[in-house]
Amino acid sequence: MFDWAGQPFFTLVTTFVFAPYFAAVVAPDPASGQALWGFATAAAGLAIALLSPALGAIADAGGPKKPWVAAFGGLMCLAAVSLWWVVPGAPGAVTLGLVAFAIGTVGAEFAQTFNNAQMPRVVPPEKLGRLSGTGWAVGYLGGLVSLFLTLGFLAADPVTGNTLLGHVPAFGLDPAAREGERLTGPFSALWFLVFVIPMLLFTPDAPRQLPLRRAVGEGFRALRRTVAHVRAHRNILAFLAANMIYTDGLIALFAFGGIYAAGTFGWSAVELGVFGILLTIAGTLGALAGGWLDDRLGPKPVILSGLALLAIASVLVLSVGRDFVLFVIAVPPAAPGHGLYDSLPEQLYVGFGLLIGAAAGPVQASSRALLAQLAPAHDIGQFFGLFSLSGKLTSFAGPFLVGVVTALSGSQRLGIAVLVAFFAVGMAILAQVKTPETVRG
Image 1 (tube, rainbow, N blue to C red):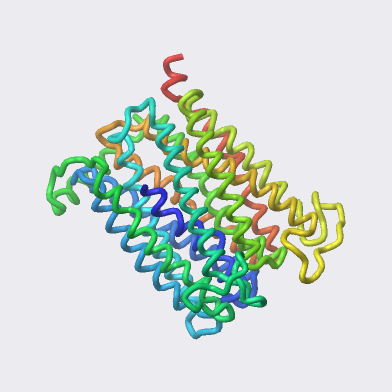
Image 2 (image 1 turned 45 degrees about the vertical axis):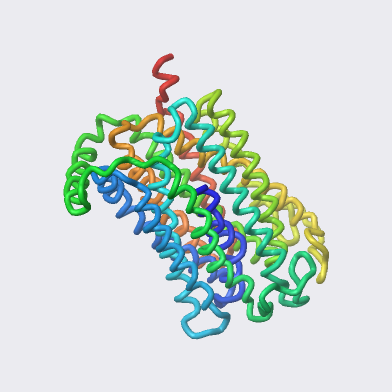
């Protein structure tokens, strides 16, 4: 239920609705919007990287994880609500949008970190893959339902004034003022507040061990011990290094996929939303299949296969533009007022995007399952803090590079192209990691 509750922030705000709206409408132009969004994502990643291990260690010393989930989920909700005031042309709208998005991302990611640390208390080790994969699939499904509700009843085409279902927006929302897109922030916050309740009430949590003040001191001492003896966990360290690199690519790919499509093809919220629905369905099926394969083959083969597919699909995505496919084959661009995905480049972009969606779910779900297998049980919060650190330590680098290359070249394609190498390098490092199965073998 946590994955179901938290996913709309990533689906609606980070990827498919608010981010493209910001880049195409709020920012001066799509290229500078992509660059600014990259810098904001980088700032959030840096903050998470600096704080994750310490917070994980403090939570381990204190015991319960659910209070941390609630606190950081609340921070995400406050930031998401403020996105309503990111009005096109309003003074300070660009700054407000970037700051609120960065703070909301910090809250959402920290809440995810402490939720992940509860997994070994819920099921035995041999069922972690299925738990993680099913949770990720349920999260994708939550994103899908929230996206359908947004497109069907809230966000409308500013030209026609109608939603995807052909209705005027609910609650008297004004399409010209892009109120449907702006409402995704408050909607994500309300969704989280309602649907996180079952997880907070009914899942087991670690017993309280120390008061907060003593937990802070003990947490920092435990973290220093873990860092001092990190060489004793060289196998986990190798996995965290691989996760750091390939997660950089994933974060940036999801952050800029909708922005790239909006700038390249001129997609509105409707085209982007339908694309998001299709991508989320692919991700749901991929995560379910990945969880099943994880329990049978182990998480490492699932991650490696997913990364290979991500690298191939990313190259294919970059091979299409408004008037060409496969880099060099010229095709007629879509005519003004064309139907949904009428042009060949748009159709190929959607198809290649579905491959990315199908691969990303298993990679993310099996990564947390693999760490749950590798990490010592008594330090699970610390290692999931380090897991979050590895996913964020250089996560600012991917978006930052996208922002810099996009700003210098003025090309969205060149900005996104730098990400392909992240998957290849991550695969090379992960191949060296020993899993329980390989150790026994």
